[in-house]
Length: 274
Image 1: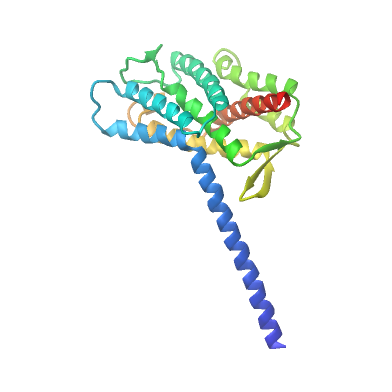
Image 2: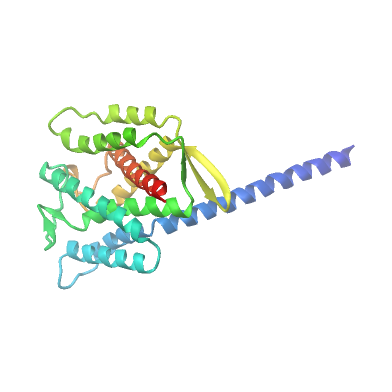
């Protein structure tokens, strides 16, 4: 009796141990794929840190950052880390980001206080690559993890929603801020939408809205790192670095939603053509 009970306990412990080992291996695989997808953002943040403390010859810091970003973009294409189609998507995000940056700097939302030859209307051109790096991550993670969308809403509903979110970044300076209404609308529209992905050949899934929140939260963490290394400054950081307000998570959340919807829409259009 005791022998059979002991054997069953040992088998149970063995099964639990195998499950934990498998879960750990899957977590490592998932983390590795995420790390590969984050190559561009990592290079940007590493450049922000290094250029903050190292003496830079010949050119101002912002100009060096632009050259580093351009060199990184060329290397990623030639090395095969990014496809030409992905570069087209990233370029769209670069232009969208620059337009938003110029407006926000003009309105005093934040500032780039350092000098630079490649500043336009107070905005250094390298800043567009910070938005492009988000698109780079989404494109690469989509390809590496074989992302797919289940019950994705029709484009006639998705496109106006993404456009409204983007326009609210501009119009809330002159009108009411409807970000929370838009966030509620996102939850309503994507309530039944799931994102599926593969890790080590095994399929997983999660609600699409949850993935928005997770990515937005990690971008907020990255924003704190960026402002610490003086990538830009908010008004309350003029006399020294402070933690970025938690309310900014909602802004990044909406930006992630725009980014994801644009990438998803382009992927869907391309898939239909093929």
